[in-house]
Image (cartoon, rainbow, N blue to C red; front, side, top):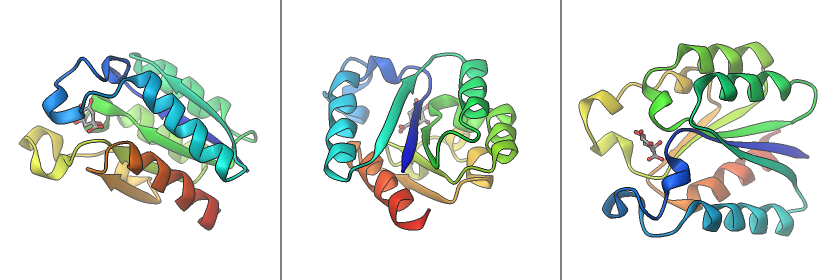
Length: 142
Ligand code: DQA
């Protein structure tokens, strides 16, 4: 099984950005966490972060025929991007939406999630563990 793990804008700033919300662990720590989960479960993966919406769309399109599942934290694009939603719908790859923070308890503008309309599952508020759960969800369900 091959999983693509995508991360949107400002997630490269983990450890520095709003530590009271996102914690003190860095993006490098997240990469290590995902690497461990995938190794332990015999899963091939690629992990990618970008601050650009179009690059996320490109990565999703390129996943067609290559990856069996996608884990995506679109970050702020969750709340704005119809393009990312359409890309996930276009490729038809089972996709799990992940957020580090408990988005449902945050600002009103974070209550809209476009990606959720195409997501097979959504995991929020569990920090790094949410990525682990998403990867295992895909392993069990795809
Ligand atoms: C986030 C939540 C989003 O609202 C925010 O814009 C992010 C991170 C999360 O992981 O909790 O950048 O996706």
